[in-house]
Image (cartoon, rainbow, N blue to C red; front, side):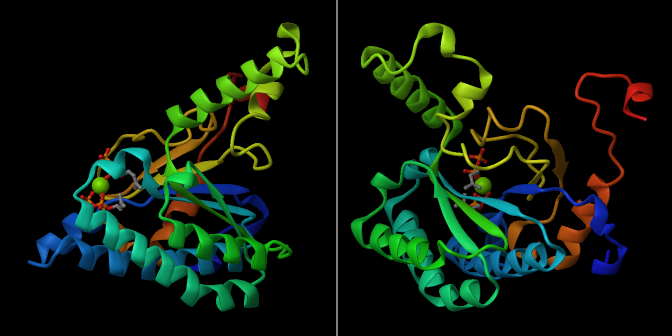
Length: 245
Ligand code: IPE
Ligand code: IPE
Ligand code: MG
């Protein structure tokens, strides 16, 4: 698929991606897993650029889950240093393309150095008005939902919130994604067909798209394929097809 094949009047507002398969892609070529992560950064660049060029408003990338902290320390270290490098290297491009960087997740757990560089980039791009690029770092949906419950309980104790005030809109305002619309399209690469603790609250009505391509293989054309597939879907939200006409 090419950019010209996309109907830009019917774009998803928010695309979320579970970037999976870096390790397997590398191992298939007899390389270390980290080689795959390095090439994964190129895919991040390509897909961010494609999303910005199309005029997509939000792109959320699942980069590191809370469960990924259980990987071998050497791989975690490599991922953190790649993250820092990528942020430093890409910030000028983000500025040039008017991209605002945001993060969701338990970023307190990130190494201090990683967190500092991340903060600098977040501040630097805060005024950009084009694509919002949301990095899910040390993120998991159950972490987020548990945290929301704690924050609400705290506000109830303080008398800021009454039990009857708790509805879906209110609960949503306690999620890390409170200023971000729900994903319209969720993509997962690498052939795995699972959610792996990503955005469970927010994907209630997202369209799901799975591809066998590993993340380092996922370039602009593959992204356009996913968008084109999304554009063939009828989103009914529980209603009948007739009602949607
Ligand atoms: C995705 O690739 C990147 C992260 C989860 C950090 P993986 O590292 O999970 O690669 P596979 O799935 O083992 O091939
Ligand atoms: C999901 O990939 C997390 C990210 C892409 C960051 P994993 O590779 O961690 O997921 P599982 O373990 O295969 O479910
Ligand atoms: Mg994986």
